[in-house]
Image (cartoon, rainbow, N blue to C red; front, side, top):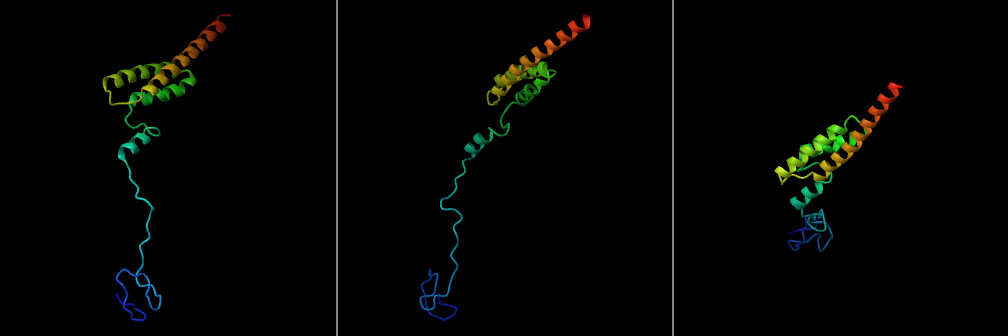
Amino acid sequence: MFCPKCGTENENNAYRCVSCQTIIQIQPIPLASQPVNVNPAQYDSDLKYILPVGRSALAVAAGYAGLFSALLVFGPIAILLGILALKDIKKNPEKMGKGRAIFGIVMGILGTIGLVAVIVIQMTSSAI
């Protein structure tokens, strides 16, 4: 390889000219010090903590209904969706979401208890 400035012959892998120190060829900048190995299985397993990947749709619905059961009206719906989700997960073992389904059932029970208490209180206060 010859230097474009002074014409001195250099080695083919030389970065600068040995005579005038002119840059002969640009060195590629490494993007990372180590190659990044992405394991798709690990990516999917990490993603399941953020998004409902591989979960029963009924379990996701039961989880949200369980959250909204604090409004009391959604309590019975959360119980129903949670039970249906557990049946769906048992029928399809590749699906996940058992924790969400159980959460929906537990919160649904608490919401239903609160709903019944409100109805009883309303009935007793209107009877007086």
